[in-house]
Length: 72
Image (cartoon, rainbow, N blue to C red; front, side, top):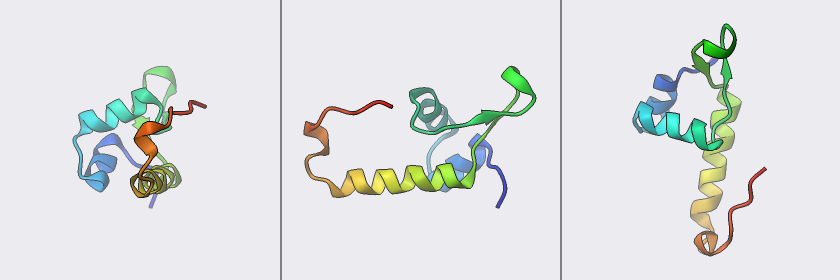
């Protein structure tokens, strides 16, 4: 599996492409651009898997909403 587009990631997450764009804008999904600053976004499968693992850990933690979110 190679690099993924926002449409591919949306299909994998069963979400809309707008949701994927919001995840990118918030920094939850790291992307890179093809052809410089104005090119299309690409997401690596490793980044998608890390995002899924992070979401699974958050879902398993009953106190996640009471803790402040740490930004990196």
